[in-house]
Image (tube, rainbow, N blue to C red):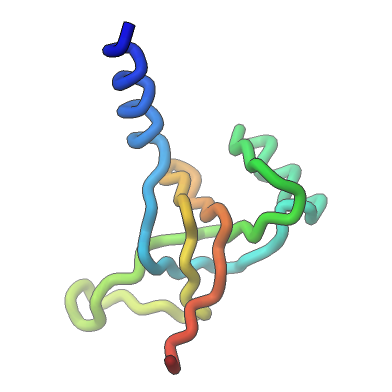
Length: 97
């Protein structure tokens, strides 16, 4: 019985990934009608009414290592749904602090 709980946790860990900092093409609200439609079509379930959602997110890499850089403001997302590149609960990163 206890083994089934560990299996469920492992499956959930594969479905989402946490990144310290991400670069998203845009950040919008889960209450935005277009964003809500996109989340519904992709099957992404968000707990809450007005959660910041990142669209087109990827992890920020160290400058010079892979040649990629973030052209928009970096954000911290609590979860990234890897298959759809959707960031959940994204907040701006204060790079000047």
